[in-house]
Length: 222
Image 1 (cartoon, helix red, strand yellow):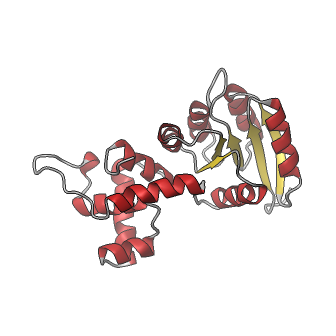
Image 2 (image 1 turned 90 degrees about the vertical axis):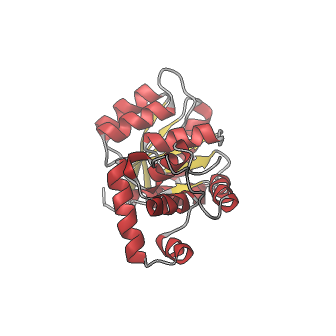
């Protein structure tokens, strides 16, 4: 199998949906479905055995739900990227999945083209959210266009500086490095330096985890 083909495992407890998704993905050039699992336990075992590039993960499943399965996949096979594909798009589900290490979050009304784009994006090291999820993140940051300073006695988590918190809030809003630099009147090189420091201090792997971290610590209102 060439490196141009994305090897994918599909995880969903509903057989009709699982089989339909396998069939759909099989029609997309550059994607090979190497396995399909009906619950989180089966998914983790399959990923450890097959080492796919990407897992499309449902959330609500018996035995082991998608959040726990995502956490276990990320820990045991870190080169495999997880994209959540679920009916649920509430804040609790979204941020639990991101915190577990998911690189993407799509709802089940997503079309084949967007699923293929998510697979390619996370495989290349990026992150991709459903437009409704992305809009909610942006709306939350718009409501707090200027990060509110904490009380003088309060300390930022993990020793983050005030400027690093500013950068983190804008990451949570979906802004890229250039947009953050423009918003804060600093250079892109300075933005990159702040992001590296944030990831190091808070032990974050990527921007998706940074979003979950910002919400978990109340830096952005849901």
